[in-house]
Image (cartoon, rainbow, N blue to C red; front, side, top):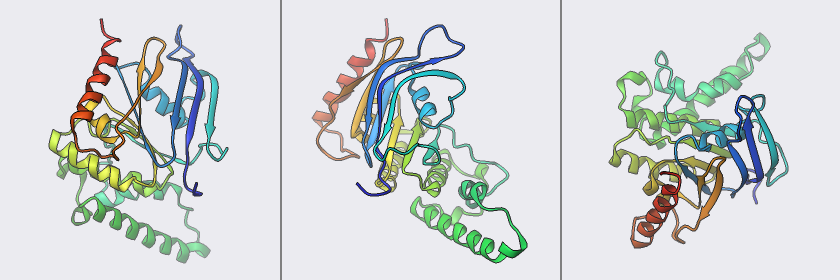
Amino acid sequence: MSANALGVQLINARLQYKDSAIPTLAQVNITIPAKKWTVLLGRSGCGKTTILRYLAGLLDDKVHWHGELQTSDNQVLDQRIAYMAQQDLLLPWLNVLDNVCLSARFSATPNRNKHQRSNTQHCDNTHQRALQLLEHVGLRDQAETKPDQLSGGMRQRVALARTLMQDKPLVLMDEPFSALDAVTRHKLQNLAASLLADKTVVLITHDPQEAVRLADQLYVLQGAPAQAHQLNVPKSSPPRTLDGECAQLQQAILDQLEKDYG
C-alpha cells in the first residue's frame, strides 16, 4: 500500500449523543478500503452523517463513543480528511479561483518580511494548481466568475475542485449531487469517480442508482440504534453502466431500506 493510501475500519462502534436517551449507532462494523468508494444508505436520521462527522473529528465533545476506529497505517485521521457537503458552501464574495484556493489560504504561513518571497512563490503555485484543477472540472474559463453567476452543477464542480485542492487521502461526501438534475448528476458522478480515483471515499446518498454506479463497498444503515448491513456489489468497476445485475442490486437496496418504514 502506498504512503498516501488510507483505509479505515469501524469495529463494534457505538455512538450516543450526550443529549440523547438512546444511541444513534450500535454494533456498527464498516470496512472502508483504501482508494475505493464506500457508500452508505439509510433513512433520514439513521446516523449516516453522524458517521462522517465522527470520522471528521467534529463530534468529539458531543458524543459518547465506544468501539474501535482503526486506520491502515495506525495513524490518527487528523488533518487527513476533506469534506464535501450537499451545499457547495462557496463564499459569494470570492470568485471561483479564490474559493478553490480557500483551504490552502487557511493553511498557509502568515506573511513575514523575511519570508515574503517564499510566500509569494507559494501563492503563485497555489493559484497555478487551482487553475489546473478548474481545467480538470471544465471551469478554467470561469476562474474570475462569482458563484451567483454559476449553475448548480457548475457550483458543485467548483466544490469538487476545492475538495481536490485539499489533497487529503480520505474524502467524505455527504450527498454532494442530490440537488442536481439527473443528467448533471450522472456527469458529476463520472467526473468525481475519475478525479478521486487515488482517494479513499465515503459517500452518503439516498439514491440507490447512484449507490450502485459508484460503490466498491455498500452498506445500508438500519434500525434504531442503527446497524450497518453490507450488500454485495457487481464485480464491474465503478462508475458502472447500469445493467440487469445493477437493477437487481437496486431492488435489493430498496427491499433493505423498506424494512425501516412501516
